[in-house]
Image 1: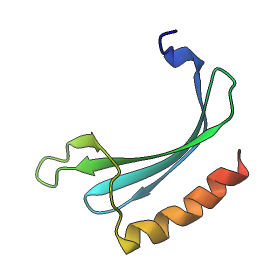
Image 2 (image 1 turned 120 degrees about the horizontal axis):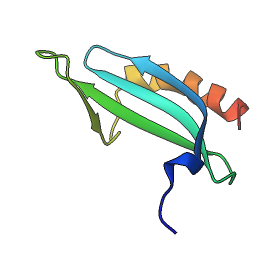
Image 3 (image 1 turned 30 degrees about the horizontal axis):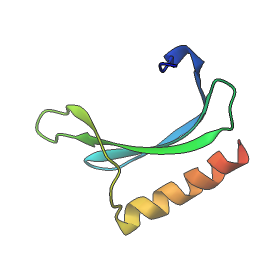
Image 4 (image 1 turned 90 degrees about the vertical axis):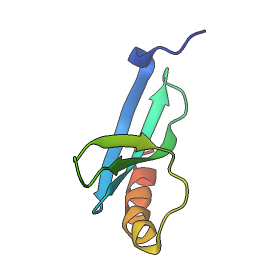
Length: 78
C-alpha cells in the first residue's frame, strides 16, 4: 500500500524558533493508527532567509531546553 497524505493526520504541532533554525515537535496518526511523535528541523539561510528541511541530528543544550516542554505537551495530547 502506497503512502496517502490524506490518511496522515496532524494531531499536535508546536515549533521552537532559534536564530538560524526551527525545531518542530508534532504528533501524527496515519490511518487512525497509534499516534507517534515526530521531531524535525528546518534550517534558515541567514543571507536569504530561505528555509530548508534537514535531519534533526544533534541538538544544542539551548535547543534541548526549548524542545523538552514541547515534547511534554505533545505527550499529553497522545
